[in-house]
Length: 290
Image (tube, rainbow, N blue to C red):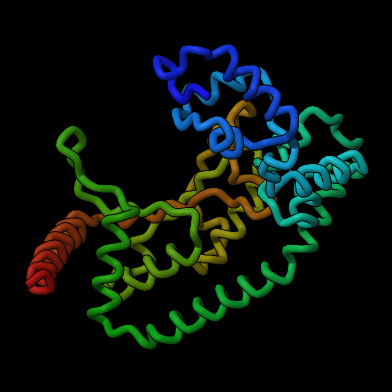
């Protein structure tokens, strides 16, 4: 037997032998050893076109999963249900069953949403309890505020939410607007700390015309502890139905504007105090970085 091509001058004779051995059910390794052909390229050329015997094929680990996934899909299961049943990824399931027809929807979207919500309810209740506990602990930790602490809180609150003098609109007056009643209450407590009297205050409601204006006026009057008749003229904002506004519904009451009369000196004090806070905060930050 010739053992090389060059070495293997009789390639066709070798091929006939290799094909015969292949059809007898021999593996490539067995054919190699039988014919003494140790060049893999030549060995593959000798058996080209002849399928390997079944016993040499490596079984695919996922063949059973694939067959089961297809069976479950034909039974009408969704990807999520098949994943729960077999424990494999949805991406694999999609590849295995994408040629099969989609199962008919057995529930309406509303029904499916309700079922999902029921499944989440224990988790949502637990998270809400944790949330409320964290808030309560934080509120308790604050304790009482000293006059100095309330003063600093008020300065920060005003500089965040109040009107400020601008180069293009220089005006030194204290005007605060907000939709949060608690923010307004804290702001009024701060003004009282600074000696601002009720007579120096003016209130105006800003609300969309689509809201219950009278109810909004009554609500804000209660927040500030005044009669609704003591409020200034309400500003109605035009409602554009094309906008996707979220501040609508029964809880929407617009904003309250609180204006302090003859407040230029107060404004200067607030601005100075704010920049004092900025300087002190930066100095503390530098210490914390070292």
